[in-house]
Length: 124
Image 1: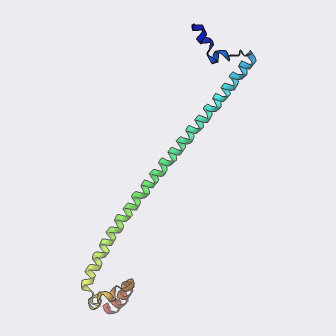
Image 2 (image 1 turned 45 degrees about the horizontal axis):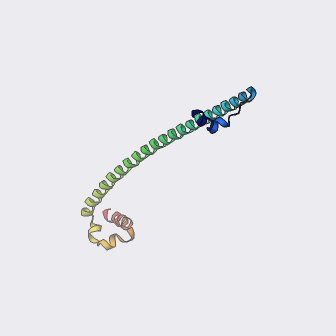
Image 3 (image 1 turned 90 degrees about the vertical axis):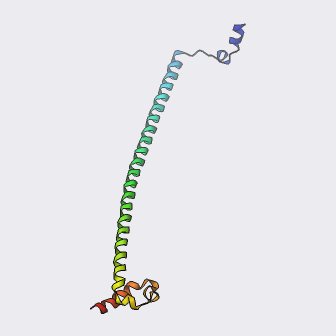
């Protein structure tokens, strides 16, 4: 009974013996295909590694640029604080500012031009 089940195996029934030349040709074909596949896989891994390296370098560059920009922001904020304090101390001493109302001083951001031109004449 065990032989009956073996004989019903489809791979057993479809087996066809090959000649020596055909076998060598098939083996060579398999080896060539495997070598080609091995080289393609190696090339793919190299591309992935190169892409990862490039992304890592770009990430480091952007982190450095971000740190530099954050430093610039800190420096500009410090400069803003300094100039704000200079302006505040100047406002209490400036006779031009004390005589003008706020609406006259700050319309259309022309404070600087009005103030510097007028102040130059008064302080001389």
